[in-house]
Image 1 (cartoon, rainbow, N blue to C red):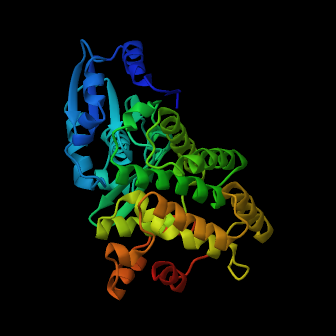
Image 2: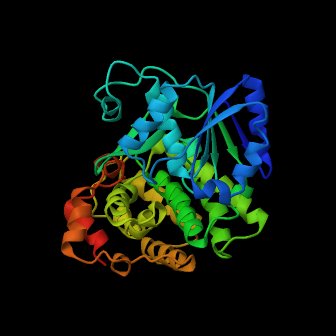
Length: 374
């Protein structure tokens, strides 16, 4: 990433970047209703004086291959100089996918998504502007896309946006239920990153900073004051930077089929299952997957409890459930309609193995059922 701009009013930096690049034709990838509701549509229109802008927003919340293909076709058929993406995590993911896949040669788009062909060429300059404080997608080099019901995470350094603009004022209009889901997603990113096999000393510093920014703001949810909104926006960006190194773990592995099959908002789906992982990852009976060993994993969990201001895995689980209740989200799958053995089996059978194997301890099928059955 070349540069990150942060702070209320930083959206105006779009004009500086556009002028600096000499861009005349821009592909703007955005949400639909959210683009107008955040005030971004009106504000950004004023920043594109003298520039030709084409808007692409005809895609679903969780990007599907066919949605990406439409965006790729649009990009290939026009001579754009720059891509600007403004929206939530799925919108920014879509921009990263369309940008990188439009430039690849020698295969179908699905070949690159599934890994049958490697990414070899960089795309256009991309400005990522989040309108939610959750996913941190503007700080990561990967993006999720679905082929039918199968989830794929395309990853390459070329996918990291060249510019990120984090303007907290764009998240002011988020409905409470969406804001709650986003906050818990950012907190889950920080926690999962901290204990993940892929974590580093640097990524763990990002995680701890994010946790310490989020916890105080959750006590006064719904967050309306500008200082707290800024703290959440920064926290989401930091946790995005953390998972950019470490990637996520078992909670995200389970969340994808929960969202895909039952329509649960992503951050809520992650939060539904994360609480029990404090117990599993702290258990002395668990098989350690992290090559740094059991003592290392135990130390990491103790540091995490300290950051959460609890003394044990059980206290951490209780705190997590209290946080969910505090922002108006359920931590019980039955309460949101996932009740049958068939529902649970569908989630278990479609768990994302890549993320599951990034967890510090091994989680088998029996353990997955124990997480999901309340």
